[in-house]
Image (tube, rainbow, N blue to C red):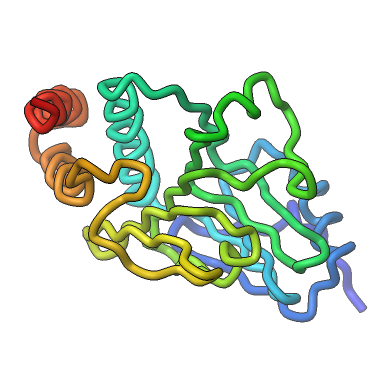
Length: 214
């Protein structure tokens, strides 16, 4: 049997590789071998490991949605801690995911200064962002982690998924921002960033938020 190192894999942007029948110990060894400073994203669920190389379209949408969310939180004077694409894993559930971005908002104080996350004692992110360009988010993996809210972006449309009775359901409102039409606002100014640029879109979004709060 020929054995190759995972570091020898060269996955073109926009492509993904699936490995079947991967044991938990093998998944953790792969995480350790690839390290934290990599461009690929890993998702593990029920013995299947997916390694994805994001496209620029993916990264652009991730950054802009994250920036719009930060602007919203700032305008609402809400504190937050972002853990980016931190690996969240639970061995007893055979699940490991790396969101495109994630935020602790209600639980932000618990994350201040934290360099490591242990989901046996720490809560999952209050809000995760997933850009479904190269691959589709496995909601079942998030259900195992019990994250309250996910914003998914696919085919240039934003969708809010909210955890209810252990399962995700699509929602037109965000429980994190119940009094604001964030689905409309984020979608509108994300699209504006494509034509007017990111900074003008974020400034216009801030004005939109202030108007909504009047």
